[in-house]
Amino acid sequence: MLPEYIQRSLRRITGTRQATIDTIEPGAIAVSPRRPIDRFDVAAITEVLDLATKIGAVLLDSGTAASDTQAQVEFIAGAYGLDDVDVDVTYNKIMASARRGATLPPITTMAQVKYRSLDFTRLADVDRLIRHIRNSGITPSTAHRIVDKIIAAPHPYPHRVSTVAWGVMSAGVSLLLGGGLLVAVVTFLTTVVIVSVNRRINRLGTPVFFQQVIGGFIAVVPAAVIAEVSDRLGFQLTPSQVIAAGIVVLLSGLPLVGSLQDAITGAPITGVARFFELLLMTAGIIAGVGTAIRLMEAVGIYLPTLTTLTRFDAVDLPIQVAGGALASAAYALACYAELRAVPVAFLSGAIGSAIALGALLWQPVGPVIADGVAAVIVGLVGGLLARRALTPPLVVAVAGITPLLPGLAVYRGLYGLLSEQTLSGITWMASALGIGCALAAGVTLGEFIARTLRRPSFLPAGHRPTWGSGANGRRSDG
Image (cartoon, rainbow, N blue to C red; front, top):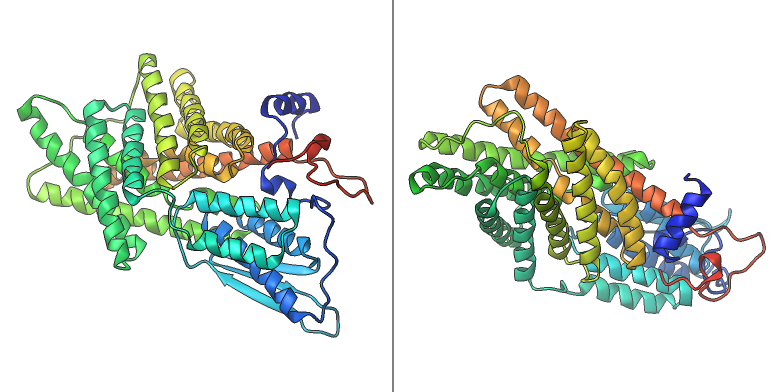
């Protein structure tokens, strides 16, 4: 834990607002606790358990860690008078069982995560619902109607807005990688095609693995063709920057943070399942990129040989940081985040990109350490900023590290393996895995520190909190 004087300074800077998960503590219910439900009232117990697991399914679907999901499910059950509840959270299933003493069998409900879509507004709406349950104690039937409405609601923006945002995100990543205006434009158009095609085939029920294969294939072809004709037309294009930005877009929707966070916080089964999904989807990207490279070589189009390192000067740093910030803000918008979360994501991306690039430029410690340190700061500062904006910290944390995903390392590794540079290819693939783990572990640590700073003090035994009171005796809005 940080020293008390540092905690006080950060609290003065960030205010007193807390995220919902910060207040999931004993005695944190703002209103008078409900009396325990009669253990013979099967209907009432089932209604509360069904509500808790349904809310937990939305949290788990949005990438919330299994431990946080479990804590919030238990909190909701406790808020309605069910204290003796066992909750089991796995990769795509939540089970909650209420004990009813030694003579009655427990009542168990289960919810499955059937929808897999990135909608951060849905996550924010559920976050507000949990705060509403904590602060005003609405009835279970009312909470049921609200959560059903949240689940059934359409995305807050049209699909075309999300598609354009994905394109802007890839353009920002290309700038972060040192590309120019031409690279950004080609990357934008390529990503719009990838997203549009994948959205159409997704409506046909195509598995996500094959969508990743198609996306990886499309990421290569335009870059290779334009690079082939660029010399004849008198301009230059670096195809590796276009391809790497496309890979980052395809990687950004995968449960990188959730898988490592589950493994770190004591949910190894769910963590392994999410990590295996991550590896499988990454394998789909590699298969698509590799197929496209071989196809281009078959028709006589060869991608330029990659140099060992991508170097940049200090004068390029502002543009690259701006690209990273733009990518983070666009990612939040592409995932249907609320508008007030977009500026916070922009700041988070700028901070992460500046730290990662600055560490590589002035203290060449390697990309794994540089990105890991940047992720810790993103998790800490982004978590505090998210609490200030009353936004779920997960939104800001994931958006902040998205531009740093190892798209270029994945491409370099695959290029080395396909070019009979086996050692170089394996080295870059290992580097990509190390960067991904460093990002996930770093942002988890940073968010843990932010949560520790914003967590309200425990109340003395027997003391009942007043209506809406948060830390330091002030009313809590978040």
